[in-house]
Length: 224
Image 1 (cartoon, rainbow, N blue to C red):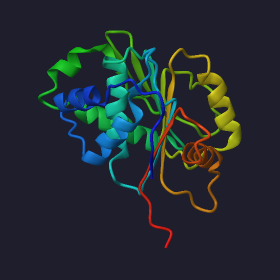
Image 2 (image 1 turned 120 degrees about the horizontal axis):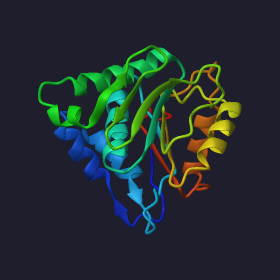
Image 3 (image 1 turned 180 degrees about the vertical axis):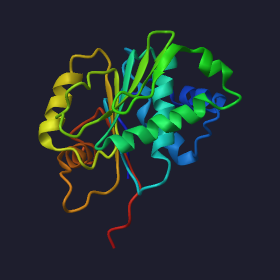
Image 4 (image 1 turned 135 degrees about the vertical axis):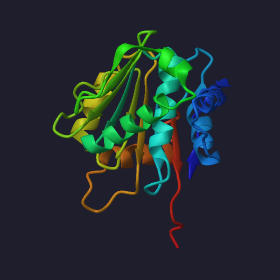
């Protein structure tokens, strides 16, 4: 399933792929397809896709895609605060560890030079990276916080198949105050016990055409 937003006048997906490649993140074609669907810009230079939904099976490279989008936001797009969030802190920390692997790679002196001295916070529940240009990438758990603390230019929600109405309402209220926000929801097909209100709502709005400012990318089994 592939739904793209309306009103695209330019697209920055290649910039994301290029800076990722420069730092050793080689994206697969399916990851580039997601970027192409989500990184389109309107004539006023705002994101055409205010919401980006991604549904695919586990262990396919979501963390790599999250880190690529976060780095591009911090280093290319002038996004001063990027938040990577997951239902549980362990999953959010996986993305932080992935970023640290990239930062610490031998060939990435240029990336390390862009990070502030003592700009890496490694403490559990406080993981973040601060850059010399003033941008910050933070890694947060959603459990028990109902969307608090997620005000950001770009919000990347992993495990988004577990995101209820209360948290989603709070997140939308918080993000609406930003000038050019983009919210990503990345997850796997929900289980029966999952509170998948937000995931289902964004999916339906995109597929049914009720939202013209959404991208939805889904790899799923044929119904038959």
